[in-house]
Length: 189
Image 1 (cartoon, one colour):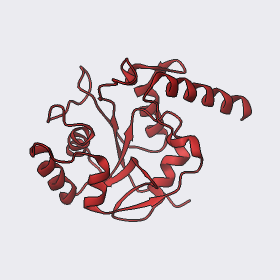
Image 2: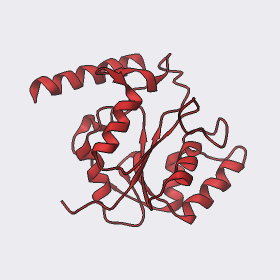
Image 3: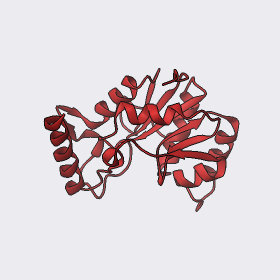
Image 4: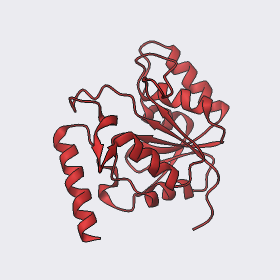
């Protein structure tokens, strides 16, 4: 595998966690809060810095209230020192370093994501992206989805190395399934 260009990471750890019924970022993933697991994953993949977007003490708060994941991406890009930024959602604990490096290995100046999944993604930290975010975040009623951002700026996609990598954990049942899958992988591996 070719060397990966330097990159930063934005970890989207805000959200309301309404379907989970409790704060997803603080769920216990093998002895540590999920946000710490995801931060360690990004660091292990080579991130020079991890910016944790979360409206809580000790984290980086959004500049736009109740504006969803684009608000976290906005503040993270403004703080990043790299021209490529990995964006991770808090609720994909089965991602691996290999999965992340696969995204980062795609040689393009466009955004990169897995086919059919806007997150995780790699974004260029460019004026085009900043302008898009500012325009959308300032407009009431605009489409503030990550998918819309990717379509607007152009992206390439690739296939994940294994099917469970992108398994979301938005509900207690999905969380339990991820814990079970991780335990099975550990025992089988």
